[in-house]
Length: 623
Image (cartoon, rainbow, N blue to C red; front, side, top):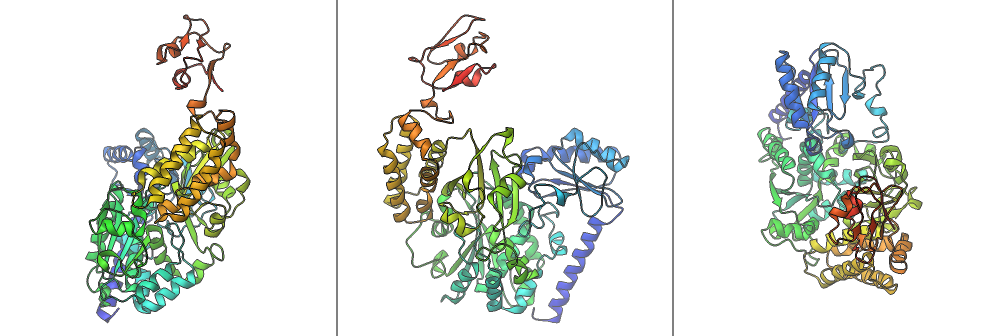
């Protein structure tokens, strides 16, 4: 910072932030926090908030109810944290408007926590009979860097962020200069968290050295993977960490203009970003002459229409420029010629979220986490057939087994684990034999998958891997921009063959054809969408070939998922003759009288599965 006056201004901001945070957390002042990110809202957090505020008003209690971000325990939403006048913090799960009033009455009025509703005790205090938050099975193995503030601060209050070391990294960056910032990121070993894992420092250095008076910085918040919600949750819970990371990155490369490219389907995330940008500008942390340094950086949000291909850098740039989101050949790379022809650097949300912590706490601390070639932590969204769905952050190198069983709680209903897809629709499906695989960029790549942005979809024994490959191929085929022939035509051919297999029309030679086309698409497509689209097909062929052969040779789906291959029959001992299947059969293939065992005519049956779906007595057998 340039002058003593500016230093004093920052000190005043810090002092005000500490005062506001101390007031918020002061002992003797009860408070209530409610998880109100998208996951919480989907489970009814707004109803819980309304009920809590109405009950407090009724009891004439002036206790604030604050909306916070996602703690990551999505399986337990709605989450409500109550802090009493002694500073005891208890977290409650699966809260309803009715139970919220009960919790407030019991804990804040009568001084007795509702043990049967309590999930954990937050902070340092202890409550007999309730586990500590840090000892929860889902939380204990985690190390939170990017998610450090999510669920603990009010994301709409910049002073909460500043009081928790927010913008300290920026202050340090302005002192040490551009070259030293890049050196610090290099020593930290931060790789891009958006997919390929390209070294962040290298990207910044290339753009910093590029010729051009004007440079740009872009945050890719176009999170389009099915089952992925890492970036959305980070923005909703801690938007200033992303903005601070962007300002530091912009200073390092000499960029004066920045864009956050966020999909329009993220209205809450966009709302949080808009509020954060305004607040940072009002305090001189964004805009002209940031903290008296002479450096100016302006930031605006660009809403995307939800095209998956716009996750690719050059397609994203085209969209920002107002053109159709289609990739172009490289070179020139964005660092040489990016948005509006200016040298441009692009990183994703999580990458920027890590930068302030690295600058504030030091590269040595950050590089002590993770593995030699994959430093630090990684956020993952756990979805699919897993007990504890949610958002986690773990050190690189942790095994898949620890993530699925220790953190995620294993598979529901005591079913067997079958496969895990990492990296979204562009990732691969890994079998149970690879559960001891360490999670890092290079290991996953060697196994045929990718880290991607961090989506993890768990599948159990009732999953058909051929159908899964078809599902993801259909997604990438529909999302292909169609510019290059290998992707436009190749994904369509792959999809048609997979449809034939799941419908019983394929031949054994189609397996080799799938592999051949998949490799061709992978090796010759223009951008990352086409280059990774065959991954689900190639990995399922590699690890689950027996399922493909069963579909083709025996015309049978081992998981009984592919309806066109299913044969339905009535279990005599279970059929009650309720007539429900007969009345709902569209082909009139079921016959029988009331209260007598029904019969399915296999000639007329089209294997639509409606009888199986409507039967109340589990009397329909699927072969």
